[in-house]
Length: 364
Image (cartoon, rainbow, N blue to C red; front, side, top):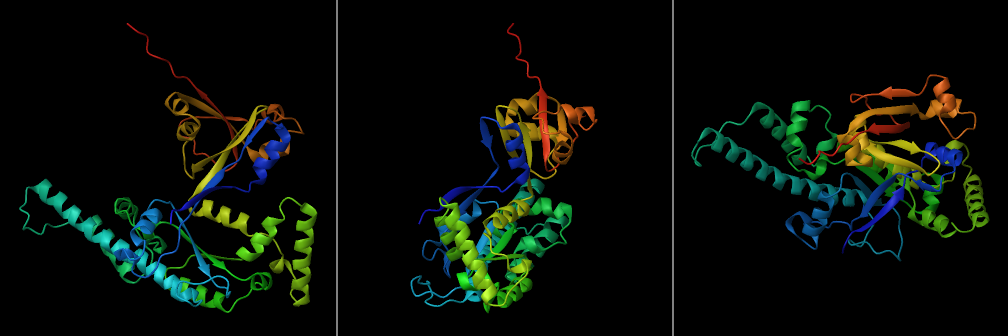
């Protein structure tokens, strides 16, 4: 079964505000690429079923949304013939950890070979390994042996993190647990499985859990072309919630998809900056901590290579000061339009113009 890839538009009120203000001919929002990979079965790490293919697909992504089934339905058959999200969590986690255990065996052999070659030692010699490598390896091995993702451990040193990056472990990827409940349980924000899933996650290093309902989301999505029907559907759901005696903001009825997308971006340490003008408003995706020249390189490699400076305005300053104008004039008058150099760390919501100059060498 081949994975399916979609690009989910990132919900972004700042981007929408800029698009409404500048009214350009082109708008390009930020997206999060989502790859739908079929579930693993027990023994996948040893090639059972299509295990090797599935694990290779997981190894290729940057983070994992772990979708867990917590609803009963005779129409949707489970591979194990019963619904038990704790068993499913154990299966997936153990298969990922078993694959990482196999990878660690190769990692340490590769490091020993490197040290032998560096020191001119015979193959029969068991060489001493570097202190940082050994400590990083031991910590990872202990976590994986306990069926706990490596990414949940918070006491690695920066030197160890640099070493672990080369290990190629699946469980170093950020992981978010999404619990797929029935529509009824989603509306009442409760399920017999939720406390058990929370306990399991806590026992395996912790992590974010997002309850949702594909049944609810599908019904809402099917009405996307009829806004009145969508509103009527949501109102009907709200009346069902009230009939259960459930009130308050915690029982608001709305799609969880935007939250899932934002959570995925946060887990991957991603943020947006904007370019805005009469022709185009665009959101560009970068890692948190990215410097201005590297952010410019996301637009075009020449922008990074010939980077001179970045003219920057924070979104909040623009919103407060622009007085309805689709320009930076009022922002400049208020002294909030800045020039930044190569060491500037980009902030979420920066509106930027990059100045660059790439000269072509003259022919002799």
